[in-house]
Image (cartoon, rainbow, N blue to C red; front, side):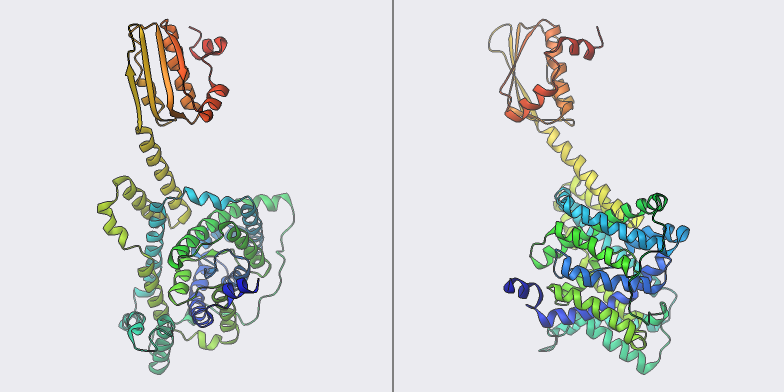
Length: 495
């Protein structure tokens, strides 16, 4: 117990502490920006980022992953806030948490195995593009000072690690933020700062029960939004967990993460925050800055709150250019550059899945839709490939007899190919269909077999099925109709 706790919390004190501080600084402008997107006060996003990070540090299934208010979730809240107000958003956040906990107990995270690597790569690349695009408003219509500060920030981020001794001991994004803030304070140049994003809260969050009527009507208002928030939140969190697993070469408990996200959203709703989920960008910052354990996530949440409440005057002086440089570093680090080279090596179908995921995600700014399209295309490609791996050989043991040997998978995508392999025109006395190397998967396959057997029998042939494996025999015995005269009559239209 003690060894496990030490490994999860205190095995990387220095790295986790410094990484948590970097993440906290980077979270502030994002939380404010996402609050503005959702149409709520900036403190709603800041409180959400604090409570999500702190609660998920204890309840989550992926150490080192950062959860907070996110843009994907904020986009789903706009209509609810506009039409019904903040209190209904808080109620929807609570219901989202309950649904996510339920998803964890139902082990819905196991569905992640249906997400192919090409979809994950497309998701990552799309998110990198979206992170970069989100920085463009800070880089358009501005003075040359902003470009100079951003370039200097990137130079520090990528150059500082090469300095002897101290280069590896302090996260370069933290150095970037501190140095550029000092330059801004010394020069007084006219550039945007965190304080220009919105007013920072001056009090700690307090317990708040949403002031909405506890009626069926209220449930019907918030349920559609909560379902969307649940799906998008869990999808982004599971994808983020998979990416952090790869970055750290360690496993995670995805179903525990579902429950943790739910508990974090319940706590967030009760503290006056908006629904949130895992953040790929901030999680990458945490990992790249040396964060590995739950402590880094906890420190990120606690330091965020302490800074915006007690050090607001200092935090508001951080130039946005410094944070833009950090986020550009994140987008560059997040993008899978090897996927560009792999376009030449991978099959066209795999490339199409990856590119479609990127295009739809960037086009809609909705990660859930992009992943859904990617998974759908991947499933169609897989079904097409497996459906084509079907062979039906024909033998004539003696005159008046015909043997068909079926090899492969028979299901909805291959049933037509299966049916066309049989010759019904030449009359034979006996037809043997050897299915010992075939597998029947669904009703469509059984119906195809029904029609084949019935057509042969109508031509006066005696039909024998051989070698069905146990699983195929079960589905054929249960759903086949070729041995039921009434069913055959109905199937053939009564002719």
